[in-house]
Image (cartoon, rainbow, N blue to C red):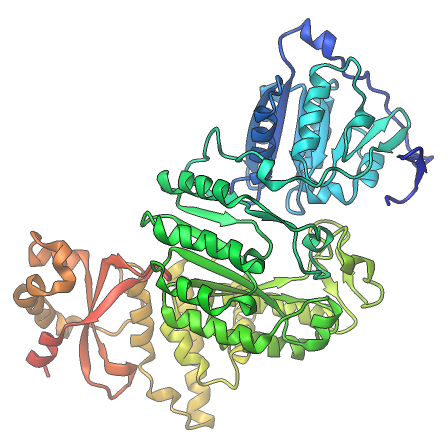
Length: 627
């Protein structure tokens, strides 16, 4: 219940704070509007974190209302937090809506409040509604503090929005209090109509039935609710798990596949919580692969069974990517946040998926959870890293409004930012300084692991450290010491920084140990990673001189390149053209200082769908001729 509320005949009334100055605004009049310039115009507004992300909520509300026959002029407007604020404001004003409904999240709520406040200064008659998780769980306070705000749609929005749109079309005989799932301003009172409906997901209209955002990540849901009760997650609040009818799902997946959408992300909180549901969808995708579209699913990796693993192992490389939340391997932490996992089975399943080399795997950790110290998080990091996922995403706890963990903040000593995204500052078990250090580790992890651009170098480097975390911790300290966190590094600069780090490590090794570090051809392994991603025409400063090999490389292309099956796609090109379209490098076998020299050819027409790296293979004929 919202603080300060009281129950009155089933309708909650929240009195405003006494020191507020309230603004009386003329109630919206649909009849007056009809005599003016046509039907009511309702603008559904989304402000994303990046342009590439589409907003499922506004498309779903729009489609549901249209399918129900709403007569209002509905329009969707999408922006990003990276756009200039004044440009967004000007566009909103220029669209001239009568009602604007904003989709609110932790990453956009501050900008939305600022935009809406200024928009109502320019258009005092404009009715503004908020919805989404960041509004739903703080509706009373938002209405108290934001005097421009007409109301909040809380919870699932499709049916609530439909009825709200109909209210604005014709107010005769309609009352806001009859619309389920809203909070609204009524004079000096703030009222609530009670919880909104829990919808049958199969009756919710397909969000993209009218149009598909071009060249964007498309979000799709085949279930709502979550069977688990993780204390940091708002999904744990909705335990009413519902699935969309499989026949509908098939029809909608065919829509994406026929249009060759680049990526579709399922928003299902635990996609494989129902084995039959997951298998039905994965079987359909297996049978209808268009060779282009990628599908992303959030799963509980420990729930994957043999049938699911076998099917996933058969899919086209890059067709499916899986994200699995580990969060922590500390049993006390997992118990404190209500998370249940079979870690042994999870690790076994991840290794099985990795062995297939066709599924891109993301594993998630959360720093700042209850009872997780710095050393405990180090162990969680090392445990997850040893599984070698495609990406290891290191996040920081957000103490969200409405989450169970927020209610226990005092119990666990959780200190967090008062403004969105409510990120953790310190806990009873980890200090602010330690979390700052983990932030730096996260930054170098993103650069040197998650980018997939330094794979061979980092795999060799980690073998000279007591643990993976020790390597990234030392690399983060190096970045801090050199001031590299203070500016955006280009790709070549990132390689240069890693080379300098290796040189410093080598100087230390030469004085203190005999670990074999100096026996690695570090320049060559870095060059190998460098050319795997792009056919750079400017050689990096750490690259060994190849001039003495150039005549033999040119000769190999002239005599052998046309016959190599790996280069069949280049038939018709001369060998000099091939020299420019591919790249060849002479390196030491196994990147050993005393290893045999071999020729590696990088083919940029053939990319690994999981890493984006070029195909690379040995030119055996060169080695026979130059052995």
